[in-house]
Length: 220
Image (cartoon, rainbow, N blue to C red; front, side):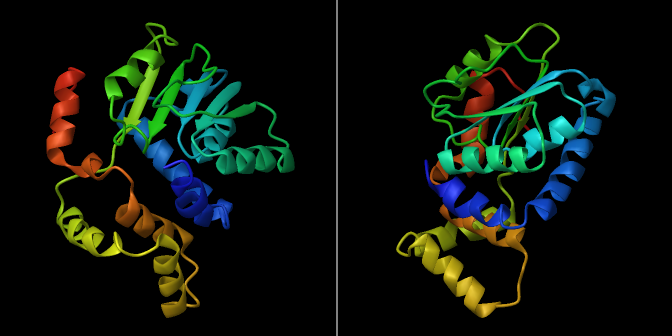
């Protein structure tokens, strides 16, 4: 897991960061709206991005005074630092942290975006407890978990049986050989994520049900 996302999944996204950022801009605005959070809420706030780092850039764009980002992969941290230096973004701090054992120097925050990393945790309650220690009664925590139970997940479950015998870079090379003019890095990274995500149980509806029961959260 330490190298999978930074080297493979996000590695394709950072080849065209502006396209990826445009997707994240639309997604974050849509998700904030769905939770009844106006974009103006972020002005002057302290935010946490536990994920790819693309959220951190958007949070800074939307007016946060300070954004603290953590990622399990040092390569992704270095990419974000280089991007911020190049684009003169001075209010993002990025740290390499394994959130299965800690959350680093996360400050008391106004809003935390935990996107695409909550579902594989073997002890999500322990992670959430650590995060809550850095919150206050008005803090917002947004969790995004991958969907489960759709026909595409059913299909992927069978494909994973096959790709478990194949190196991930071989799959990427085959795709790029078959579609040499295809420039959709987002599709390629999403495909590899679906096929090679390290913790298979994260897409299981039963796992979602167990986690929601343990955390006293609604599951639907």
